[in-house]
Length: 161
Image (cartoon, rainbow, N blue to C red):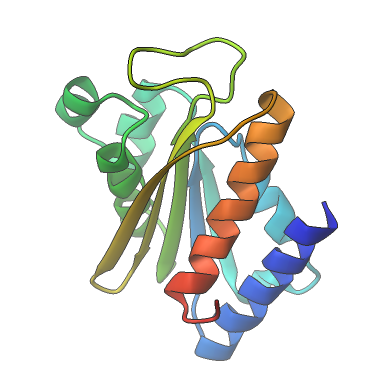
């Protein structure tokens, strides 16, 4: 957990230095990224809000992710992760967004998407990056690895890796 807090602090410093606000759109992490961020004193200077959109309906209602996109690619897809990040930006005052959507387990696996499959989205200005990873371990481990990777990706987007 110390690694996650260190990454959140680094992200905060990078965002604050650039005068940027962050928003998160989380599914499989259930607000874990936002939790790590809000563990950092002073985060209100660089964190706007977080969306926990666990159901497909909430992804559509709160983040404007099209139902057709979810139907075509599945909620656990880079396409939906990108749409979640874009939707979080559109529905917040933030300049930067990150998103997570995945299968933390122990159930939920499907052909081509084993337990541990997580898709990420990071968006800033006109730059959008997505990534798909498959993590090993139990539900807690997958979620922890996901939060870590989401923050590392944010630092890469900000040019701090």
